[in-house]
Image 1: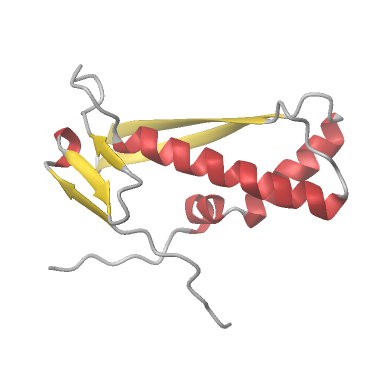
Image 2: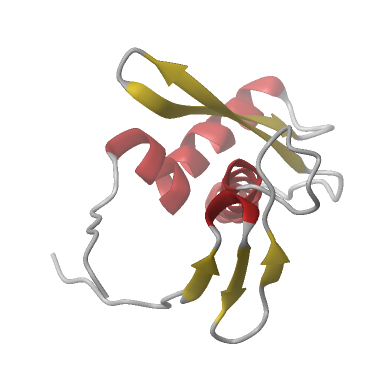
Length: 136
């Protein structure tokens, strides 16, 4: 299989969950705050939820186009990401709730299933991701 990189995001983070993150193109420049800390800023779980739900809605559009279905303007994807702690440490669980008003249940379900196959975030949640960690 041939792979072609379409885009690479570069984000520099300092201070961890209570720090800041900035992208190399300055399109992202945010304050971070730990969940429940009442500090200003978002957290990694919210960022993941935003990324997955946005990506999934894009994949839903592709699935609808393939099926010849027009998505309603009120289409929405709500993401929930849980930060959990178990015997082996911290882990995430996540789910999406897709709203397709006016689309029949069978068609909506088929579009959601197809989008889950197309969406790179869904693939990552289902199959894992090739990842590495190294000293800069």
